[in-house]
Image 1 (cartoon, rainbow, N blue to C red):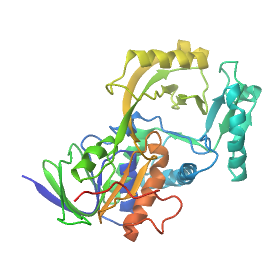
Image 2: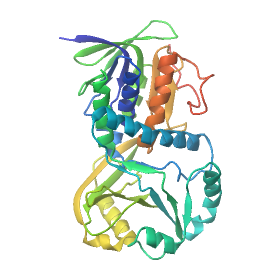
Image 3: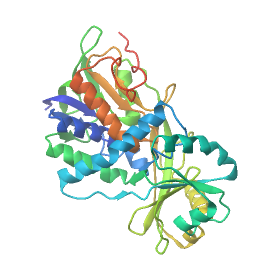
Image 4: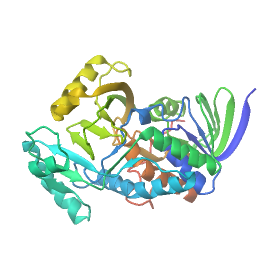
Length: 381
């Protein structure tokens, strides 16, 4: 038997972005349903280290930088709201990010340092001696580092679960292991989505938000839309490293050492564009371990706890993320393709989608500078 459910907003995809959107919409008093083909945070969210590189992002300016910084400003208030709603604390690393630099990188960061400091952010250049004082035990051949105490790190699955629970407390409903397989839309453009179907449920909603990560591409095709997303594999491992007092997240190129507060830390993540499958591989494990030990020699005595991998959605033909109303549809919005910044951009993505739904906007003319750059896709008749 197929059951029919109705709501103000249906969110397809329950990773961190989808759950953040559901939470903001439920907090605004709307009836919300979230649906996912798998468990919450089982896609790209589960392949993230939760490192929020906002202030210490490399570009000195630009729309992408502003989006990151605006979302970072909303992060601590969001955590405070979640903790108040749930009556428990969330583990957040507020000791910042220490970004190590090679000699040839130092000059290139000067413009970014000046831009952040002029904007009122705390971004510091540290000499090799200051790096050793802040974080002992790193290799000795460093040219220096950028230190960003205002950046953050949080465990993505814990954040997603908190968003989901807080949304439920505000009336949102979630259905898992319910893959969307078809849509019903009005016959003529501009189209309106009249129903969304899974094997056992049919949903009707005032608005539909497509936030299904890599799964968004196939769902978009069902709607006559082009939304190509490239899967980019990431692998990481968790090790037990007692006696190594890591404080901030340490970043060396694309390698991160992420302390988790219990004596363990994540090491990762890789960026693999041509990986044939999403499962962990021994070669990547070996490379991560080798680089981690070179960076922090004492890690040679650490104990391996687990090794995991996943895929992140990278948009092709446009910048990440894909965010906003869909051209040719009156009640369809999209929030996907966040690539490696889904955790960081979840707060601002949720705020933008909330405002779009509440204000009923189907064009972008009056949105702020943090709104999407262009309408999404192009529906075919």
